[in-house]
Length: 347
Image (cartoon, rainbow, N blue to C red; front, side):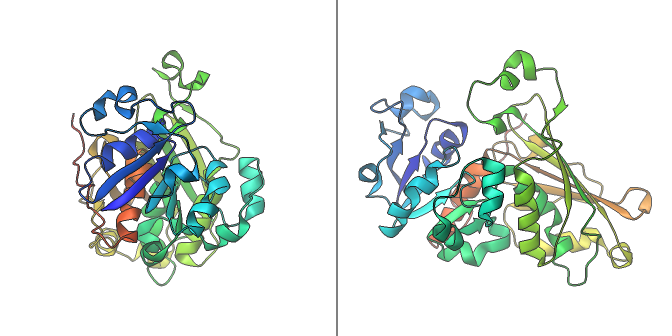
């Protein structure tokens, strides 16, 4: 059994981790931490976990976590890098669902997250946790900086085009038009997340620059080995969970001569969680809700030189907690789908 701790168990990603891990056949939950809820039973805060999680919140200290084999950080930015070194040096593996160990350039991190990086040496060692792109590195990692939700959808939408050998697209004119449910903003009281503000409304935000943009471009360059430029616009839609990424690319001559449907089907044939849907499909967020699946569809409108890739994920599962558990499975030599076989919820 893998002895697991969760730092930050009261937010949406923390509670989603609990939902998944409570039924994982190879996991024993050893510690769930929260500074504000110490001593409170987890199931009192999350009644859905009654009779499945029989543990109370504890202080987020090394003493609380020292008996774990792996610790997940489902915390705001800056928390993991303050505690990761002590855990890693004690032989405890770490998966950070925040951004502390995603961006390799510390100046970029400071610019987008407004704080200095206190563990540059550990950052250098950290493995970027998009497992479909970096599986072998994740398996042996002591520390994984999990991919963000938007970056997961965009990178998986583009990966086959970037690894096909000869370039198939103009990699300087990629457009990622992405929509997310309100839970992507986290479990906190902000005006934009209020029911009366978000309901019956649809809006773009951070058009001038979103902190996931440098992660998307870094990730695409790690996949292809080439420089990419992405125009990324996120939108907030009035639903709880789900991301739909609509990605536009300009095909070059080689790309126009390629059977894109066959390319995607072949590329992801052996990926348990990536479903390339039949030609002409239109994946919806409800097709993945509550699951760790990614559903993709490739279109070439009017047979012209623009390809449109649609990718949908559940931002709390494949975009966060589910992908974290998938990484944990790989790190401990387990089947990646173990504990993650949940089918999407419908309706």
